[in-house]
Amino acid sequence: MITPVLPTYARAPLSFERGEGVWLIAEDGTRYLDLGAGIAVNALGHAHPHLVEVLREQAGKLWHTSNLYEIPHQARLAERLVAASFADTVFFTNSGTEAMECAVKMLRKYFSHIDQPERVEIITFAGAFHGRSSAGIAASGSEKMTRGFGPLLPGFVQVPFGDLDALKAAISATTAAILIEPVQGEGGIRVVPDSFLKALRALCDEHGLLLVFDEIQCGVGRTGRFFAHEWAGVTPDIMTVAKGIGGGFPLGACLASERAASGMVLGSHGSTYGGNPLACAVGNAVLDVVLADGFLEHVRRVSGHLRQGLEGLVASHPGVFEAVRGAGLMLGLKCVAVNADVVKACYAEQLITVPAADNVVRILPPLIITTDEIDEALARFDRAASAIEKDTI
Ligand code: PLP
View 1 (spheres, rainbow, N blue to C red):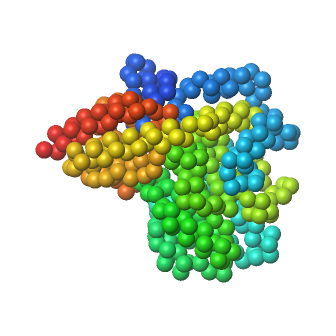
View 2: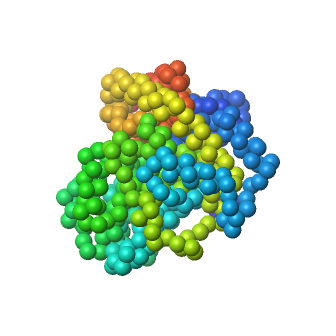
View 3: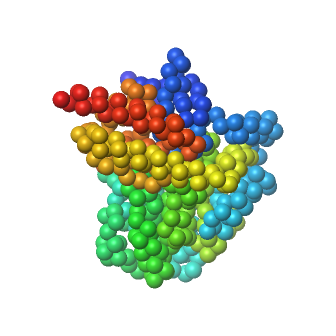
């Protein structure tokens, strides 16, 4: 018999009653060290005092009015995102998938607007994840996500990850855009080298294409810069953001240059909830912290400490781990053991991690994590790895 909740998720037998900073607390009081942050969502950890205060205050004032009216919190959030990024304009959504949907519509509208309607194709990369809408699964191209859901939205072409020659060969007169995660998340924490992002920018400029970055998982401070692409010194034409921007409140955004957004006019797109007062009050509160002096320096400092510790862990447990990869606080342990077993062994040490493709265990802690908490996490990882070694001997 089907369960009351549609059975589409593989859930761990864990549930939590509350959270405090980097800790998740079960009903029986057991404290779990959370290195998953709800898959890179709880950027400021759980129950961050500033977010709680702002949410409470806004909840007592106004939740929702609709985009039929001015929304001052939304306007302010857009102004702050524009000031802190390449973008000139922002469309707000409730999720990453919806931000991607806006990006796909926007880029196609751009080419229609400039009288090149034949340009509809979007090139993406193997291992990509851009959400679960019809456009999102078509963009990923993965058999697992698309099987049985046809006909797929046409106009997506996948090339192998990091293969510049294949990419060049895929560009044609009908190509509109290149879409990429600067750091692949679900695909197994695969960092796109700066040189590759630069080459993408150059190719887009050469062929008149739009460059779209999906920073839904890697953005908002996660890599130690506000946006991950800043490390490469290149800018996209369109960028999607979600997860960390709401700190746990559902909020997404599609950012764009004036040129890329030029086809989007009155009535081109819309959302009932997107950018409502409650979500945008929280989004502004997240930015108060992430953009405050010293916050991104903190992320860079502690991420260096974590990475070094994980390198040591890999060296001590070569039968369990193969390598560390990633950027900032978006790290992955490529495993020798089965990644699901590693995640399970970590649960037994009250440590939360997240599996990803390519036999990787993802480490995505709240960005507020301290070096002491990292040391505690490393000790738990060490015990989890020893338990796996014992089981396999
Ligand atoms: N794009 C990337 C890179 C993601 O990691 C995700 C979610 O994991 C999405 C898109 C989809 O976002 P959402 O689940 O908020 O719709």
